Image (cartoon, helix red, strand yellow):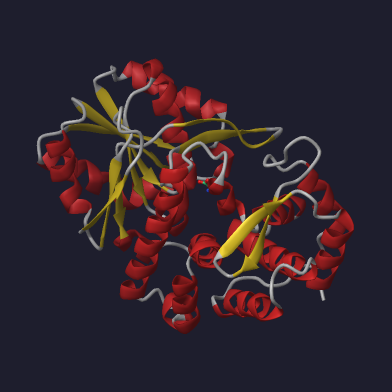
Length: 364
Ligand code: GLY
C-alpha cells in the first residue's frame, strides 16, 4: 500500500494521507482503528455500491472492534440534492450519531460530495473519510475536499470546502466499474497529462491499449500519478482561487455540451470534446503549436474517448450553457487555454464566435 501525504494548513488537522493499493479494503479497518478518529463510524453509500461492498466494509471495520453501521441512498446524480441530505441527517440523528462519530463515504463522486457536505454541516461538522470506488472519484473528486449538492438551478451550487481525514483508494473497485464510469475518470487522467505532466501524457500515448483493457499495473501507475498531481495543486490552492482553476481545463465547454445534451452525453465524453475544442481554440488564438493540438486529439481518440460533438446537439444551446457556467466571473468566462502540453493559463477574452466556429468544426 502506497501512502501519499496531502500537506495542508499546519495549524489544523487538515493534512491527511492518501493510501493506494490493490485489494487494500481489508487493511483499512486497522489503519482507521490506529487513527482513533471517532467512537463510531457510519458508512454512507449508494444502493449499487452497497450491494457490492456494503457488507464487506462493515465486516472489515467490525473485525477490528470498531462500531460501524451503514446508510444507503438511491444511486445516481438525481440523489445529489437537499432531500437526500435531510434524509441522511435525520437517520444519523435517529441512530444517535454524535460529535464523537465520523462518516465514511464509500462510492463515487455523488457519494463523496454528499457525505462530505453532510459531515461538514452535521452538528457543526464531524470528520469524514473518503473510500472512492470509481476512477473519477479516485483521481479527482475524492481528493481536495470539495463537497456539495445540486439545485434545480444548477450543479454543485450548495457546498463547502471540507477536507477528509484520510483517503483509501482500492484499485480492485475498478474491476466492477461500468464502461461509462471508467471513461468519466479516464478523461480526467488525460486532462492531468495535458495540464501538468508531459511524462504522464507520453505514458498514456504509449499505453492506451493497456489502459482500455484496464491492466492493473498501468491503472496503479496512472491513478497514483493523477493523485500526486491533484494533491500538488490542492496544496497550493485549496480554495480554488488560483492554479486549482487549471483543473477546469476542457470543462467549460464540456459541462455546456453535457447540459445541452440533456445529460445523455457522459461527463467523461463531454469533457473530452471540451478538451479538444479548447486545444483548438488555443491553437487558433496562436498560443498552442498545431503539433500539440494534434497529439491531444490523437490521445483522446486512442483512449477511446469521444472526439466529435454529436450533430443532434444545438451549437447555440452549447454557447448559451457556457454563459451560465459557474466558473464565470462577472461577464467574462475564464477559459483555461494552453501554451503547450503541460503549460496551461487562464484567458478571459475568448470570443463567442470562435467557440461557435470550433464546435461546428467538431461536428464534422
Ligand atoms: N474537480 C475540480 C477540483 O477539484 O477543483
